[in-house]
Length: 210
Image (cartoon, rainbow, N blue to C red; front, side, top):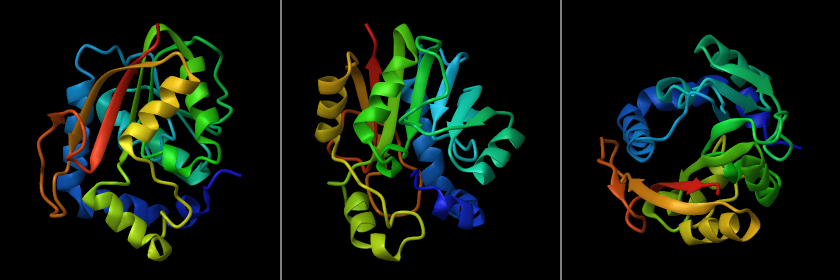
């Protein structure tokens, strides 16, 4: 079963996080835009689109999510969103140029199946961008320590960056093109994007499909 219960119960809390932590949200968006320079997203899909907080400003038209309440908000933000789970996307094979996951992989029941699906829907030459909080980072360690008190992260499974790169490259044909990171501390302020990983808590990895 997809872990939608927190997102159904605490939809307003989810939306409030982005307002209360706007500098961090802006930092995350800047990193994604930094990695997406030159990447076609007009025929792109966000997997785990949620309320459209990332798809809308990035210009990604389509989304899939298991939470009906989140889908309603995403649609209000102009996203053509449908209900579905990451492990079995209601999308044909080789139909989009770009697929995106932002803090989604930690909530799926079968991460490997979700990664395989993210590749399956891509046209040859397409791109997959996955963004997440690195479990070995300062913020990742805080989330892990407080997970039992969190409305959203109680059932989450966090990943390290190298662990996730290996999972993608060992189970799909996707290969890493570029990595980026941001949020280099625990203060709520804006942080710049930076290439690579190992310093920032929020990491994004851009893969290409041959």
